[in-house]
Figure 1 (cartoon, one colour):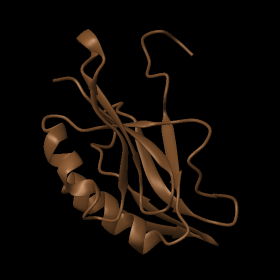
Figure 2 (cartoon, rainbow, N blue to C red):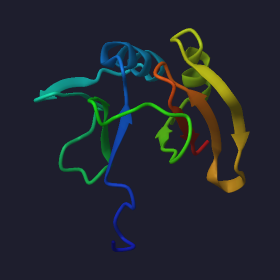
Figure 3 (cartoon, rainbow, N blue to C red):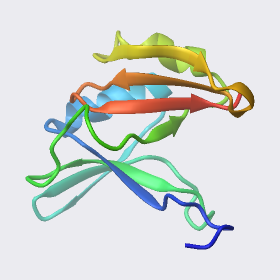
Figure 4 (tube, helix red, strand yellow):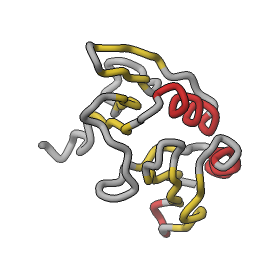
Length: 126
């Protein structure tokens, strides 16, 4: 890994019910995810400008993807309006476990439990 590249290149958020998870993330971020299937693996891809060098990821339902609120945490970008994202979490079927918290010059973070039971970080720079 080179210091000029992203340390994260791909992420997957496990789901037991892909449609429910897709609705949750589309609702809280006000986005559309693109569905794709490969064999027994179902995915819903987060939006990205292909070829931009930005990190891409997906919700994934397969026998090998088990939701958990323990272990590694990814932080999803809530710029420019973290408060709007956080205001939609509970009505979309999630739970806020750590509210918006300042991390000094690095912005703000929060932890949520999504509709599938995963602990996910939310981050904004403002």
